[in-house]
Image 1 (cartoon, rainbow, N blue to C red):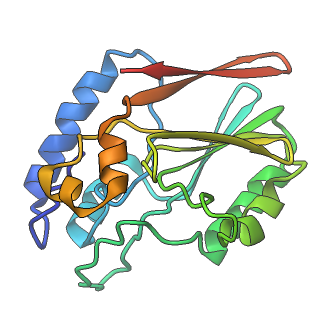
Image 2 (cartoon, one colour):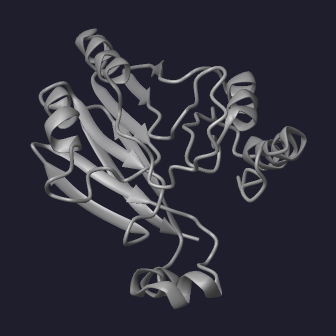
Length: 213
């Protein structure tokens, strides 16, 4: 959602309406919808309260048959009483509580496949803190993929590290004129197709396709 992004603080009535519109469209899919917040979904206390009221606290673990979904927040979530007006466009690293949550859930060996879902592409750079703090906790824990929905320098990327697929795909409004004038990255993004991922789990086999919009 847009999240009433340019108003500080955001108007919760507007944000609630945006979620209603989106949820009505998603309902047509006919499958469970699991959500993680990004830098538009939670930007301040009003947007935080709307998200938590509608969808519950983060992080979250959902088990479906033999599949575990770990839903984590790379979005900044303000604490009670925090009136900071900061957007944290690029998100924040996973804190100790979320890291421990990941380890605890993965140690419960009742799944054959695990998927980690976040918003931001925090593993893009080779020296990213992700590789030191998060990735080691995922290795040899039946994690098949780590999935992000934001765009980084591209709208899609894919790599495999220690048997874990890192992939992101994004559907985003085309960069506006201001962004296009600002940097080459925005011009590159404007030429790429919006896309999403379709994963198939069949016994021990996990495959995914990239679908363009």
